[in-house]
Amino acid sequence: MIFAVVLYFTLATAALAFLLLPGPRAQALGWTQRIIRNGAAVRRSIAARGHRSANRMLRALSKQSTQACEGLAPYRRWMPAAVVLLIVAPLLPLVLALRGFLQLDGYDHRVSREVNQHIAVLLEGEQLVPPPLLPPAWFATREVEHARPLIHGASRQWELMNSEFRQRLLVVFKLMRDKHGIEMVLLEGYRSPQRQQQLAGLGPQTTRAGAFESWHQYGLAADCAFVRNGRIVISEQDPWAADAYARYGEAARSVGLVWGGGWRSLKDYGHVELPLAGVMTRRLSSDQPATAHAH
Image 1 (tube, rainbow, N blue to C red):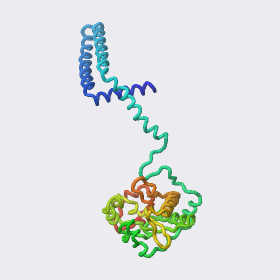
Image 2: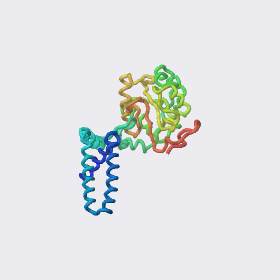
Image 3: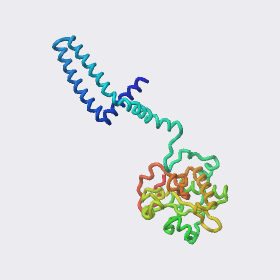
Image 4: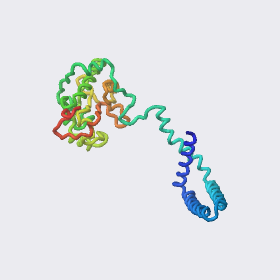
């Protein structure tokens, strides 16, 4: 095993020197040509003058090989660095794997999709009923319109969302109300591809997803906020709201949802989604809600 590893690094170092250094490459080609010529001469010598002449030619080949090694001497100071590079590069992913999983944006390996027994009962038990819709005037305040551009065109129809996602989100609403005394409100659920493209046109500060690139188009995402003293509270700059968002993210994760506040870039504290395998590749027409494609 050790011999194979040493052989690999030796051959890889030689290959790197041949590919990256013009001097050694030219010398190697020259040596190769001479060795080929000498090899042909060896064969002719064996045929014409027997083994004694062949031995002389083999000694000449040995001399050529020695000269080849001596020709690499000017580059010997680079050899240790090349060997270290060849050793470290393959081992680095292994070291990272041993220290812990790598985390990519939008995915947290620490989040378990398993739910506790109490939440499992809520998910598998009686189907929860969506809360009553709030009056449109609640969504026309300056804070809501500033935080959610074009909110007047948002859909807050629970029935247009994927049934599994809808049930999980309703459990989150129930947990927030029963455990923390916080009432929540749906700002937007299903979003048509036309509206998604319209929001994308406002710039990356609003969304980086175009049409059919957001789970909203498949009824598998929702934007939510809190209700306090008869007003919708969205801004995470509010200490009360910041704490509520943290509890909201915890509740969402406990039922297997992805929380936008856990992303490393463009955090969306009110956003939750349920990415289902094989769904994002589908294309829905503008007048065909995602419930028709649930599961």
